[in-house]
Length: 400
Image (cartoon, rainbow, N blue to C red; front, side, top):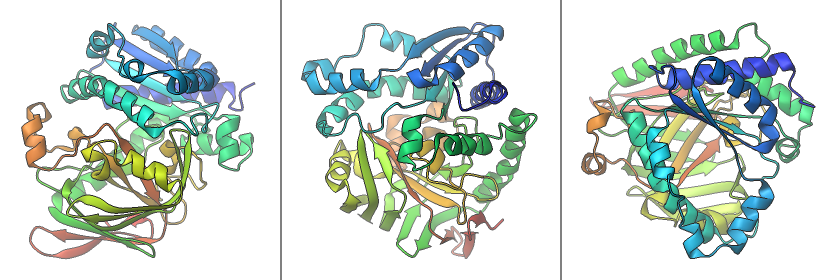
């Protein structure tokens, strides 16, 4: 039996459809929408499916591999099997117009002990499929969103009861409000003002200081700030993809994380000339180092983000990146992502942002994208292109 009520599930599905359509304005009848769903999220997936069919989309529904299937594949496959991409996948992902993913893991540690190289091989093999979808998104042909469904495993790893975990999801996604999709639309409008303000400042460098870190990033040429775009439910972050070459100083992730079946804690990265030259972690350090050696871009930044506590009602560790990267709490949060950049942060015609131009203006490319989160009290200052320095974020909120 679901820990979310039937009314909450209906509203959650409404918000997901809103998110997908907001992420890509211009959906039309009989567009192809892929719904991917972990087995434990089936109840929500079925409601999403029904709503999409009623709106006349052509829906392709796929369950994700169970923890046993996933582990067996990584444990027993050989190099050729891990490099395999099914016939027709390129054509399918070239043609799909929308994607909704319902994350509902039955295990967060099922891949513990699996050689990280094996996971990296699969990520690299499937990167061309992600590149296809990214290109179609740049051209306005593809839109996506995702969410998390409460499971016993998530609650256990977050050290919450399943009822407490579900209550955090309902609170964060406004599922107890009469019309949560309308609430999201208002937040979308409110955060638009912050994004316009940041863009208008003409920022050269952003410096983030807390008790444990002092990091500088270069915003880069022709960048804009994005966020609350419908892509993630929930999403309160405002982010950009910086010029990776201008990263310097120390970043510290005080929130732990689960990734690839591994638990990591207190990651500390020291950057010089854009690359992480020192990598440390209180737990899982070897795993972090292996992930950051996946390819050249895996040790460079692809994203810088801030969340304003006035928008986010998430105030507990959720053992889920989607929620943790949108943590509000007492101090808001900052997070960076090692690995691939988001090309839609380009402030120009993104369809003309070819690989040569991406490289020229410092967009990072990698098979990895891993968000690392800091929820400490922090001060964020910006050095503008005219040389002026101003505080843009303090005590968990933007200073606009």
